[in-house]
Structures are given as structure tokens and as C-alpha cells.
Amino acid sequence: MAEFKRIFTPYYFPHDPNMWETVEGFFTKEECDLIKTTGKNMGLQKAGINKDNYDNPLHRKAEVSWIPHSELDWMWVKLHNEIVRINHQNWGFNLKHFDEAAQYTVYDGKGTHFDFHMDNGPAQLSVRKISICVNLNEPSEWEGGELQFYKDRNVIQSLGAIHVFPSYMLHRITPLTGGKRESLVLWSGGEFYK
Image 1 (tube, rainbow, N blue to C red):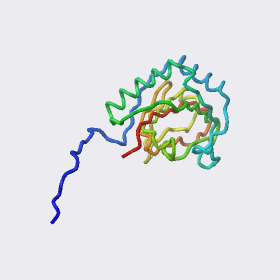
Image 2 (tube, rainbow, N blue to C red):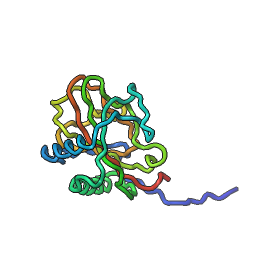
Image 3 (tube, rainbow, N blue to C red):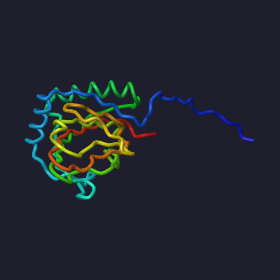
């Protein structure tokens, strides 16, 4: 009979791998306004799905632009430092990079939305570990448009709040029934899951 041999000692991180953290008031109104102005200046276009920018308005209907690392250096540094803190406290992912452009997203009017999805996928998306969503305008400026995780768990909406979560978590923006919702989405990554 073959002898059982333990090949590794398991390490159990003490937190729930399907949790998120919200930091309210992370950005001031003035900082949010500067991010929105920069996003608008980058030129909005119809939001697609995946790297091919596949258009499916039943799954996603919004507009986006991309803010590169050459813009808003203070924003990138502030977010980087907070991601390091939150990751260390909650998940312990082996993060290696924070190099994708930030996605400025506008949901404007009834029916704009982004149905349930994960932020990782093939190729470059396969190494995303942490997603960050930033509320850039007051929740009183839109109706509907909830950031929800699977099983309809709503996230607190407030101006300047950031929501940080593992990129494998299913999440969505529910359809707006009115108004305009502006946000910023970013990702930090590491090695392939193994």
C-alpha cells in the first residue's frame, strides 16, 4: 500500500475570500471632479465587453474612457497605497502590478447597466486579482444603478467611496431608472492563480 505523504503545509488566511471592503470619503469632491474632468477629456466611447470590445447592450450599456498612468499621478499613488493596505489585511494576494489604465465609466439615463460579470478572464485579464470601483458623484444624482455582488448584496454608495474586492467576485451595476452615475474602475494584478 502506498504511503501518504503531505506535500505542503496548508495555510489558511483568516478572512472570507468573497468579501469586499468599502472606504467612504476616500476621495474628496474636488478630487472626484478632477477625475471626472480628466475622464471626459479622454473621449467617451460605447462600452464593450472583453478585450475585443464586443457590443452587447443586453449585458452592458454605458460609456467609457481610459485614464492612463501619465495622468493624475496623485490618484494612482493614493490608490496604490490603499490597495496594498487592504490586500494585506484581507486576502494576501501576491500582487505584482498596477499597470492597466483606469476606466472612467458613465451610466447616463434609464436602462444603462452592466449585468453580472467577473473582472478576470483570458490573456491580460487572467492575472487581475483586485478590482477597485470609485463613486465619483453623489448617489442623489441617479436612481437604480446599485453596485451589487452575487445574491443581490448591495454596496454602500457615497461620493468619493472606494470599493475593493477580488476580481473573481461576480458583481453588477443594476439598471438605472434615471439620472447619471459616474465611476472609476481599476485593477491590480499578480501571478497566475496556481
